[in-house]
Image 1: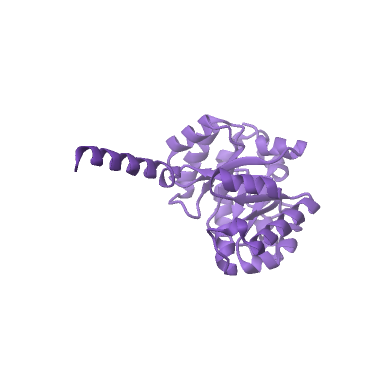
Image 2 (image 1 turned 135 degrees about the vertical axis):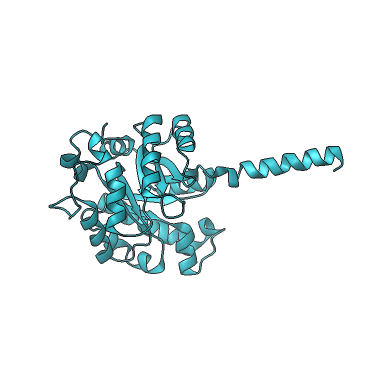
Length: 263
C-alpha cells in the first residue's frame, strides 16, 4: 500500500479544492459503496459522533482502501488523547482531525502525540496494520495530515497561533459548534457577517502560512460557498445522507400512496 494518496497529490501540485465527507454509520458496506461509487478526494471516519470503536474503524479503513486506495483516509478522533491517536494511526489512517482545539499549547500537544520521534513521542509498534504501507515508520511523519478543529470562541481567538504550530497541517473549521459558541445563528451562518469574517480570517491565515483550510458543510450549496471562500478541503457528503435526502423522499412517496388508497 502507498502512503501517498489523493490529498498528498493535491498538496504537491497545489490543486484545490478537494472534496470529501464523513462516515458515521459503522458500516463497511456503506464505506465501500460511497468510496467506490463517488469521485471523492478524502473521507473521514467519525469516532467523535459515530458509534465506532477503534476495532470497528480498522474494518472501515480496509473497506475504504479496497474500494479506492487513492481516497485519503482521515479519522476524527473523539478527544485529544494519545490512546486514540495511536489506535487510529496504527490502523493506517494518514489524516487525523481533533475536535475543539483552543490554544497553541493544545496544538503542540497534538503534534507530540501524532508524530514519531524526534518530532513527537508516538509509540513504536511493529505488529500494526499500518506497516502494510511501504516503509511506514520511516515515511509517515512526512505524510501525516494533522488538522486541529476550530469550533469555539476561544479557538477562534487563538486561530493564528494554532495554525502556525510546526507539525500542524492546517485547521478544520466547524461552523455549527463555532456558531453555537459565539451565539451566532447556525441555519443562516453563510449570510451572517461575523461568521463570514471568521471564515475569511481562518482561510487567510492558512493561505498565508501554506497550511490547509478545511471545513464541514451540509450539501452542495454550502460546499459552493466554501469553495468561493477559498477552503482547500471541503467535507460535504456523508453515509448518513438518508436522514436529509432519502427519508424525505420516502415520506413523500408514502403520502402519495396513502392519498391514492384513501388510507
